[in-house]
Amino acid sequence: MIARTLLQDGLEISRLIKGGWHLAGGHGEVDHQRALSDMVEFVEAGITTFDCANIYTGVEQLIGDFRRSYPEHARHTQVFTKFVPDLGDLPTLDEPYVRRVIDTSLRRLGVERLDAVQFHWWDYSIPGYVEAAWALSRLRQEGKIARVSVTNFDVQRLQELVNAGIPISTHQLQFSVLDSRPTKGMIDFCRKHRIDLLCYGTVAGGFLSERWLGQAEPSDVLANRSLVKYKLIINDFGGWDLFQELLSALKQIALKHHTDIASVATRVVLDQPGVAAAIVGATNTQHLPAHHTIQNLLLDDQDLAALAVINDRKTDLGGDVYTLERDRHGKHGKIMRYELTKSE
Image 1 (tube, one colour):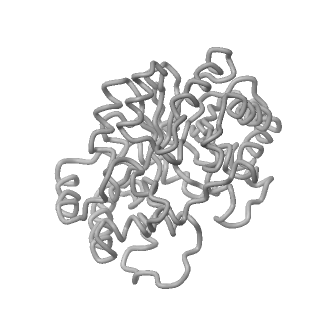
Image 2 (cartoon, rainbow, N blue to C red):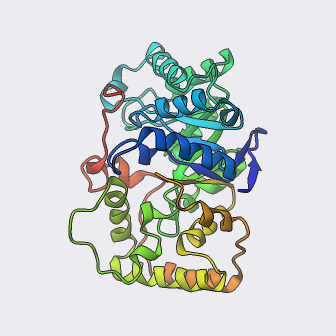
């Protein structure tokens, strides 16, 4: 079974979380019934914690259908969703708006209380994120939300929420052997304030795998949105040649431990201070056998030193968590979709 952990507020979750973004479109056609049966297999394998969002088209409803179709399996799951208001709604966002979105998530998922709501705010220059977080906190007091969490906040703004007295349970952020931005202060801040880290992007949308080892840099249109997003990170990390050196180092470590590149990359993140879980973006169950090897993978000083040689040559990505992605005119921000609540 997949390893489990206790969040600092006492909730037990699986250390690998089943991500939902890959089921939201842009990653290939989704077979509804197959997706439901895959969820059953994930739960039976011990991956009982699911991640979704109000803006992941159809995913909350899909998990709700799973809950209704397989109530015994659903009884053992924890579902973390997100509250991501549209960029255009931020200037006028009020508490009734927050309540409408949360009520919609409750209805889709078929629950009376959301296990966690992870809050995102697109543009810090638009005021209102503290007030929106307070609205979520009031819904927590009313019993509609079990815990208020955040996603993609930087240290300064997360500090504002903490200073306002809003209890923050977890922070979902991007963290990988390619992207070490959380080490610039976020890890220390969250440990100090007992906020657990849930990490996505640990295998860079599949780039951190044997599939890309020894391959020429892709010049054609990439197959899905994840690859587009993480190819930009690879470019900023130091380019394709340095990325290939990283893959080679990861492969040597994988061979030594009788596992694969993705498992090593995920283990590196899970071993970081304050990290409670890693999110695996799976559209099917084919990687479940490999996931089982992660919990028994013990990286030694030699392994970490081999990766450090590569990291010493990388280019600093710059900024805090999600800073690059917040620049709507930059290459990272241009690929984002900012108005998805209305489309849902």
